[in-house]
Image 1 (cartoon, rainbow, N blue to C red):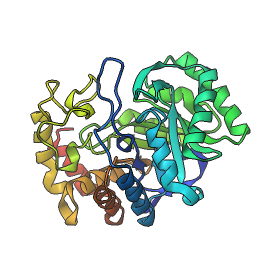
Image 2 (cartoon, rainbow, N blue to C red):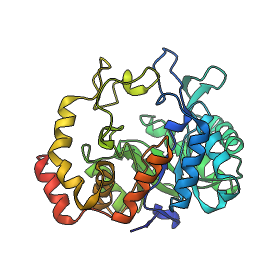
Image 3 (cartoon, one colour):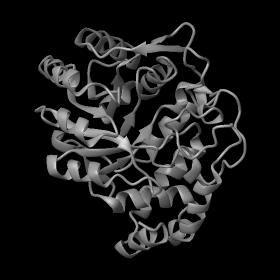
Image 4 (cartoon, rainbow, N blue to C red):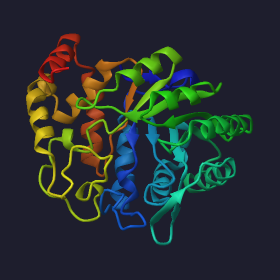
Length: 326
């Protein structure tokens, strides 16, 4: 249970990956909308990555826009000489200004993909990306089909080992799945937000299911229930971010009630709530690779501690479904 295969790449990674969005620090949209998770301590981020490595985590997922490049820089700094011991995934498609830490548009052209790849390689301090992911979830499928040729060029040049689309639409994911070296799809999945159609596609096409928001943007972490600090995306949640009240008052009470309904099962066998949420994902499909975020050594240790406890049993999985009325 400690490892899973990264789809058609055939590469084995730890069953748990680490998502590096939060360690990018604060950044914002052109309208001032916070897009990060608040302030971070870069030295603590590095220590957390080192602790994750020591605990057997070998898969790290970031994106060029997280912290407008800062997340990639911190991940590259932390990995250092251990780069070849891990699998690094990053994403492209969003535009940003590193100086002002502001997102300022999108670009789905092949020319931008190459520029973005060159910049990501520099920030990460590496000569290749193990999994390169298209980051525009709702991009035009015809344009995405054109990008397959670009991605295959990157593979032939040795700059990329495999690629994927980060999207919640199975039809879009199927477009990328036509590519020879497409290995995965990244999509939202957690105990409160199932994705049966996407999991069926992954099974049919031999793709890994990389699970963003495995802890429901912190709700399944068991700690945050009140209002959130300015600079945290959850304090002013955009329309796509479910589970938090639009007025910035904190978690949606209906979501918290659903968590309470399954809390006893998720925290059984000595698990924390977060560890139980990860265990649900592993039980849900043999292709899932959750990527919870982190900002501290303590969070890294708690998340990595889920690996040794393994997935929920089939009976526990069925009981969760019954309690949630699915």
